[in-house]
Length: 60
Image (tube, rainbow, N blue to C red; front, top):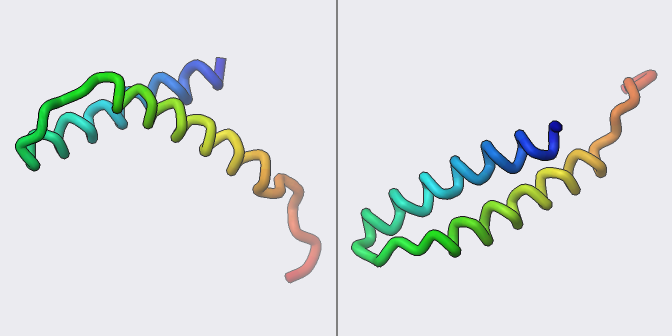
């Protein structure tokens, strides 16, 4: 379920960002561009969470 919600919120935020940026630059809004960026950002989020250690640090 966490994978779905991560993708859901990433999708919404990236689509919103794509819409705002294309509106500000005067370009044509393309739904597929936002979708591709959302999938890439979701994969990046999952990779980063796998790389970051989860164990507490004993001593600094």
